[in-house]
Length: 71
Image (cartoon, rainbow, N blue to C red; front, side, top):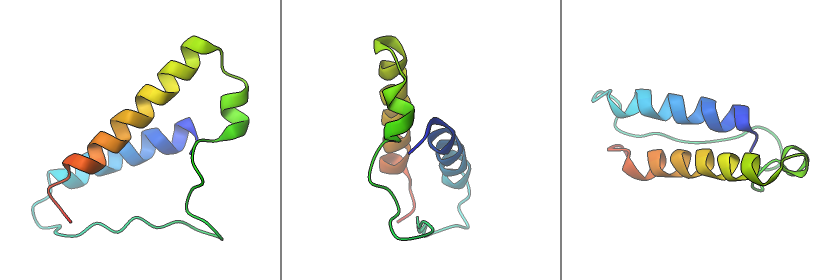
């Protein structure tokens, strides 16, 4: 997952959380696999501080998924 995908997914999920007409959210991807984890090419170029920021944003996304009122 790249920084851009993490930000976009977090924003989308936050928007869905407030919509009480949506009862189920299905996450899917395109191609052979949805995600094998973080974008290794992006992470390779990060210094320690930027890597911490990347992981923090990923944590925010996972927390957004966990807190969704929808299934």
